[in-house]
Length: 388
Image 1 (cartoon, rainbow, N blue to C red):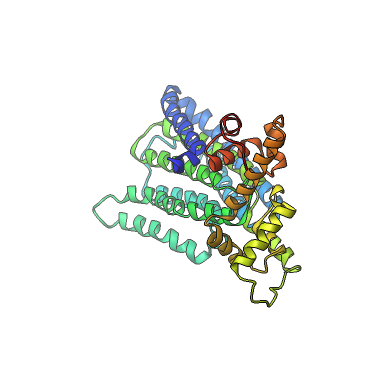
Image 2 (image 1 turned 45 degrees about the horizontal axis):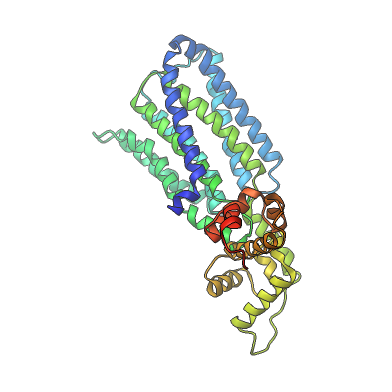
């Protein structure tokens, strides 16, 4: 129950977008075929092409050296050029009408569409597994699609559905890394704002919907499928570009912090009493004295100010000594501080309380307080014994 509750907003997002797709299929049937082919489709393709190329330009211009943004920039560039080429064919009358959804797609068209769709996997792969996608691994991922398309010409069975569904299989494999990414973020950061896993889940949900609509283009005919795919990809490009452009990259942030801290590393004193129990006492005294948890930007590597360990050992130390992640460890201290302040100052507002305790927003404070204490802040104030 708690597992699903954590992704409640993402489930709502997926359901609302799914309802939009269903409504699109229903309403688009009322668009006359001729109007769709000669007006609606070219306009949507033009918007998609412009938006993709503009987004690519924004990504490259504001990449800030981040590989994950360049990945998304190249994806948008390829989609923009592909849609632009398709629009050019229509404008030059090589394709007299954009009846993209009026006929069954051939194996070659399915393969080209899948290769283009595969590029949408570049961003989440880089976000979840930085540096993993190399040219060799990219070829390994694409090779099964090429083999299936080739076999479709030689075997009596129809392999086209497998060609279409293969990118969804890759998307499913990516989903298995979501929990690992979530755990990594909790092990290194005390605030997950703008770096949390929920955005990746939301992106993959949009990707699944795009894939299902594309599969529907194989089994059904009529412009309803083309209309839905076009507006859905336009929405995905616009929404994703905005999110990726303003989303922090946790891997780069961590490396920058590690480089900064490496110049001020604390050497371990050679004394027999400096064992785990000693380090735990030193850490808790430092937390009580300096209250670093009140800083929303507090990170695991900041513990190097008092503990002479690298990132891996710091994470292991927190987990072995307290049985929780760094994120949970810090939030327990923040909630303890919130209880103390609320007890001493009953009139303090929740917004002020969350800010003073190091939370990025009142909503994050309320959610964390409920997770730690089992009661919402206001209910705890009324019902719980406010003893620290």
